[in-house]
Image (cartoon, rainbow, N blue to C red):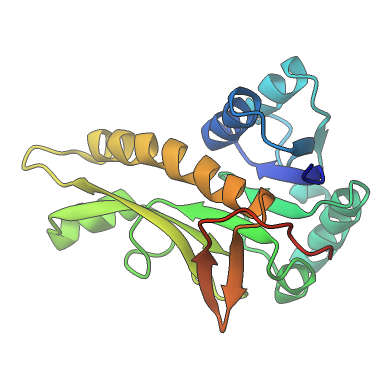
Length: 212
């Protein structure tokens, strides 16, 4: 029997990816405990969903801290109360310090709404449309100190249509995010996702993940 794993999810808004992850974990009966959903914003609507699912919903307001370093230290302290095997960024709109990222190295995932390394940062769909690309998409990756970089775990593509707007393109990409992010997290939980020489690899056979 596989050991139960623990994850903590960070959000800043509605947390649609967080909801997709929780639903997948429930429906597919992952060997996982979602220990907490934490936001840097008191008005994050995703917190209500977490509460309704019986998951602790916690706020660590970034505005309460004078520096990025002070906020990250406070956030790390709250996260570590739950001793997570995996930290999941699901629309968490903060640039994290290198010290924070280093603390969770190899056990923090993010999803970005572009085909990295293209279109890092914000307004990715606007960037894609302005560049005239014909294919756009989303990327799950391990988080490193370099913004929107890090070993790529999974990607999904969508065509860019002639009449696309930022909103229509974003909606199609988001559908794919809701598919690939839960799959990537499940592969980590089941011990099939690992880093080998800086490359993310997903094994076919399930193995026990090492304790951290």
